[in-house]
Length: 398
Ligand code: TXA
Ligand code: MG
Image (cartoon, rainbow, N blue to C red; front, top):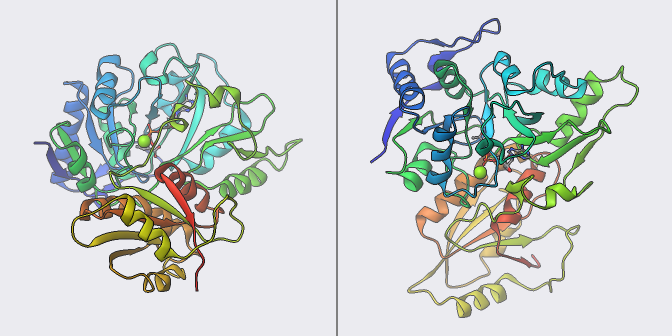
């Protein structure tokens, strides 16, 4: 069985002037030093919390250690990993000698690090090919979670870490999600409680020669946040960089085809239960005949016979009309998981994977997720929901 050690983030602090963690509790200190030994001396993987999701970490500059990440997750080898650092001094050696960070990139680092933003850099040759999937860039982020940062600082080495889940499953936001999925496959899990953001980091390419910023994967830092900071920080520049979103504003050839953003082409975030996206916004397009929910449920019942009562999990904004609509459907046991108010997409993002994984554990036969507006964190929510859903329906409500 995997060893799970409590590692309370409130017992770790970083002063702005130092990259060394101050740890006020023996349990935390011991957990971090054991984890560091697993990583550095044994070249093993360790699961640790970040502010986005739990990560499955290993030494980034050690190909043997990094390979264990791929085998543990069953991750395709052409999907590169994010390298996590705890201080800016760890970034230098990851980039080529003499490399000068572009202004826009520097502005984003200054504002959002430590935090849920991953940036691409040209890679130094010392980075094993397995980390970058042979590409010329390396993805780097400095997490803000005290346990993540303290672990990297204690190991005194950058850590490669994808989300700590079997490839294709929703990312874990609690230690118990990891335990359920990877128990026995990892030696050590650091339990730092629930992840605040609950969705993965935003992956940004700020290296393009046209000066504009490309969001390769929407996430914890919103497009609106990026735009605001760039317009504030770059106000003196000749042109304020635009923020382009993959698929909406650009579809890079290299991104569409492996191996550049490999994360995008795989089926993702799918629990072992079928997920259906419920379209309710007037703006959403698609060739769906609008019908009532009962008709869809009857069809599902015919296609997928279940023993006993049909149990359906529902994830939707807490102020959605969908909750009332459920009452009109007979013969279903509902598991209701309100995500939070529509006006608070950050809270809905925080509850999304947790809700999916909770419903999967409950053993529902089907999960319905209602669409949300694609502004702020809603963009990342819908990116994940579309990948999780095998089908979508449009329903009329009221
Ligand atoms: O929040 C997060 O980012 C979490 C925590 C643990 O830090 N990590 C995470 O890692 O989500 P992972 O491996 O599940 O997703 C990494 C994403 C993938 O979509 C991958 O294709 C992309 O980053 N990526 C990594 N290196 C890249 C590169 N050099 N160029 C383009 N995309 C890259
Ligand atoms: Mg992942």
